[in-house]
Amino acid sequence: MMTDPSPSQDTDLVDHHDYRIRLNPSGLDWMALVTRPDQKPTLVMAPERETVLAMAREWIDRQLASDESLQ
Image (tube, rainbow, N blue to C red; front, side, top):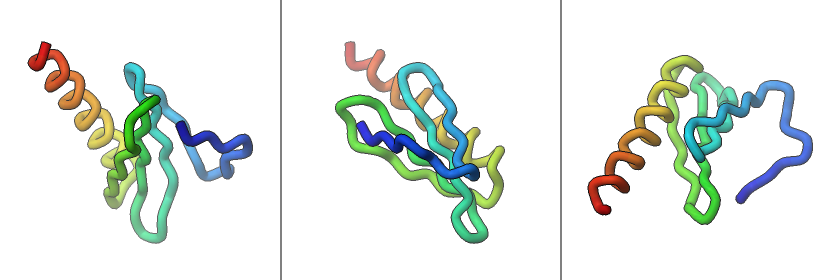
């Protein structure tokens, strides 16, 4: 798991289920790095903070639904 002991002031951390979403402005867009222990991080980008957060949460929900359908 990637950890940063001193995240920048522009970075927001949001937990959604067992995932962590790290939000950060990137030029004209917002970037969300979605991480979960023992998995590769996923990058989501959108023009607005609220949009990228919603997209990251939707991605997580799809992953969880997919995991449940495999069981």
